[in-house]
Image 1 (cartoon, protein in one colour):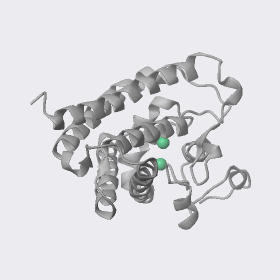
Image 2: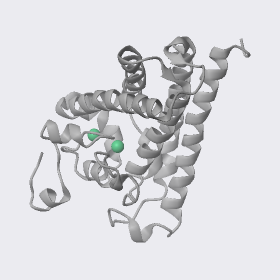
Image 3: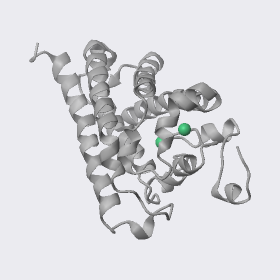
Image 4: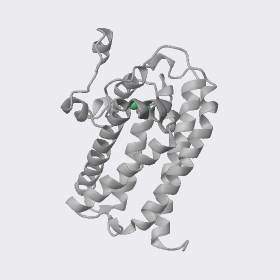
Length: 245
Ligand SMILES: [Zn+2]
Ligand SMILES: [Zn+2]
C-alpha cells in the first residue's frame, strides 16, 4: 500500500500542507516575539504572546483532522487528477483559477451563514473570532466542525474544475496548496500586505484583519469580488465613519 501511486500522491500533498503549519508557527513566533514587523502592523494594540500556546491544543487537533481528511480524500480521489505530463503553464493557471473561484465562493457563503445564524456564530464561528488581532497560526484556530465544513471547499473546486475542463494536474493542485496557504497565513498575519495587495481582485491582509477587528462584512477570503457583488464589503474608512455592513 505504501508504494502505490495513490498513497504517494496523498502523502506528498499532506506533507506540503504540514509544511505550511510549521511555516505559520514560525511566522507566529516572529510576529509575537520579535520587533521585526512591529512598524508594519495593521492594528496597534499590544499582542498577548501567551495566546499562541493557549491556542495550540485546538490548532493541533485541527491540523490532525485536516491531514486525515485530505489524505483519505486525495487517496480515494486520485483519479480526479492528471498524474501524467505537466501541462502548459496557462492550463495550470486556468486550473488553479477554477479551484480558487469555487473553493472561495463556497467559503464566502458558509462563512456568511456562520455570521447570520446567531446560534452558529455563538457556538461555532465565535471561536475563530476570539482572534480580534490575529496572528498567522490563528488561520486554523477554528471550531473543528467549521474546519471540517471548510475542508470540502478544496474538493468542490477540484471536482468542478475536472467537470468543466479536464482532470486537474497534480502540479497545479500542489501550486494551489502553496498559494492558498500563503494567502491564509498572510490574511491572518496582522501585517500589512506587501504582495497580495498588488494583485488585482485578491484580498490583502487588511480586508480579513478588519473582519476580525469587528466581525461584520468582508466575508470573502481570497477574492474581493464576492463582497463587492453581494454588497458585504466594508472598508476602514467606512468603519471610521461608524458604518456597519
Ligand atoms: Zn480569519
Ligand atoms: Zn468570520
